[in-house]
Length: 472
Ligand SMILES: Nc1ncnc2c1ncn2[C@@H]1O[C@H](COP(=O)(O)OP(=O)(O)OP(=O)(O)O)[C@@H](O)[C@H]1O
Ligand SMILES: [Mg+2]
Figure 1 (cartoon, rainbow, N blue to C red):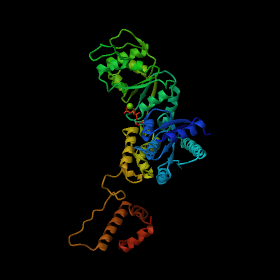
Figure 2: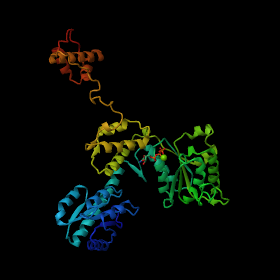
Figure 3: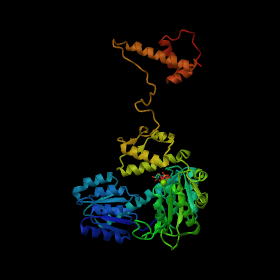
Figure 4: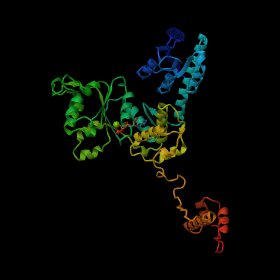
């Protein structure tokens, strides 16, 4: 089941002869090899858009940025490459430390070619198993992924199906949903799941651009069309040629621009501001709104004809509180993400923590959940995130297991503690008996003691002045 593809390996080594040696060994085995002459070069490679790395072979001691720093940065890469450390005998201890930080193995110089090749093959095999394991696990748990979207709920699975179905078409799509429900991620997924994925995905927030500028932003302009138009501009419709244009917050668009947009969508051509020429539009338009457009249509601020143009297919994202099955999945995902970003100190979110997360109603939806987890990961100084980091608990200062504190005051002249405790005990039993309308069984439950213990205390405290009530 493990895919055998061309593995891509990055060699980080400041010594030129060693770098050349490692390169030859690896290319001979048919691997794709990239070289970095320093730790800093390696970090630059990580932040570039290059193809995914499967493995990194790095020298431990290098001037400037060390192999340990390369390792730390590599652990944060989404492709989770394995890392092999190469070290001189004198630094073996540090290499062992590196293993604790997640390196797959280390090799002490000088080593034989065979030894090196074997360790590389094993590391790649282990990584493939790890990936496969992760995929199987999510299948088993019913977790679905679509681009950067994750979900488990039935509602979201149906949306994933819809996305896959409509992505390859050119139909206009309207995404609606409360703020933070993932509208932008859905728009991106529609793009990556289509055959337009290699063309641009451009997004514009219609609410963030002043109305005088939005027209030229969308449709372009020619030089001199207005003050400040120093050069021709193609506009977003033409710049996203063959790709996807995402019109976010479409409900914020001025009615005058709405008319022009409608014309573009109908005629599939744009005319830049100040130009007499028209250009054909090839992009797919996806719009999003967190407003109630029906209400805007009724009040006359949104054009019904434009709405129908955009709303050919509608993707309605449910608020997070209506799909609680997604909460643990998303929380885990964000926990991994932020924990790794911050050095991987934390082990987990406790079960009580998850319970608290499930009980919350998320007015800010997935974005709020993400922010909660990021904040908890940042603030948590223990090894696990407990429920106190999440909203919905007792007010600050209240003892968690004793919400109703019994008010006690110490008189200046002092007191007899045994007598005082007996009085408190008597009052509490009395109150519990009253609350349970005399049922001793319920009273014992309320007080968290056994029936037998209750009977004993009643006797001891001399509370049994009436004939013994039956133990209902
Ligand atoms: N199903 C999901 N899986 C993973 N991450 C998600 C999911 N849904 C939302 N997110 C994350 O939640 C945050 C908010 O998502 P997004 O920006 O797509 O929401 P939105 O609906 O466009 O919100 P707004 O209306 O406020 O613009 C982002 O950081 C996004 O990565
Ligand atoms: Mg958005």
